[in-house]
Image (cartoon, rainbow, N blue to C red):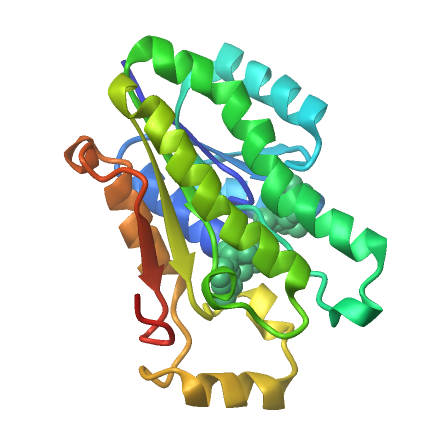
Length: 240
Ligand code: NDP
């Protein structure tokens, strides 16, 4: 049976690289996005990969979209939980809206998505789930109490899920990138970004393809014994 992969936030940045890499392995990929129709259409046309618009922070939208994807293509056996946002502010200046938007998109999405796909994965005896966390979830970052809280929460979520599903042929792993050359990082002020790069032992930003290569291995049959693990890809910025 053909494998179907859902990559959230799969039309831009790291997610785009993951969608393309998985698709080039011969797996049917559906890429999700939330609002940037222009980027999504361009991505779809260029790569021949379906793009589906829904908000990963909204439970009803996730469950409806996943039902529709599965009716059209077959059951999702690979989920890449990649969509994520930042709304940075020091805690004493952070609004409830900034807090809630990040919690919904980066963390509640894990429940919204996994709870919709896990039943069929359990029944079929195969599943691969990869959560994209962040080095800032591992070490903390000024101005990112909301973001870091969600990214470290994914580690606990993934390990607990792995314990529940390992006996069913399903793996749940985390990839924690450092600073990667995407629009999210381009939004950081130039002088601040330069000072960050100076602290990275590799003295450069990472590339989305470097994340995609690891994710593409974690979804293979050969990676069946890798479960509940966290992989840092950060140029040596933080060593575990
Ligand atoms: P980008 O901002 O470049 O792309 C984000 C993607 O996620 C877009 O496709 C966007 O859709 C989608 N998205 C955002 N919010 C939602 C939502 N509510 N529902 C569905 N889709 C959504 O991000 P990156 O590629 O930089 O980051 C990808 C992941 O990697 C994130 O989880 C991020 O936290 C993590 N990460 C990134 C690092 C970096 O240096 N870039 C470092 C460490 C972790 P649309 O196009 O419609 O806006």
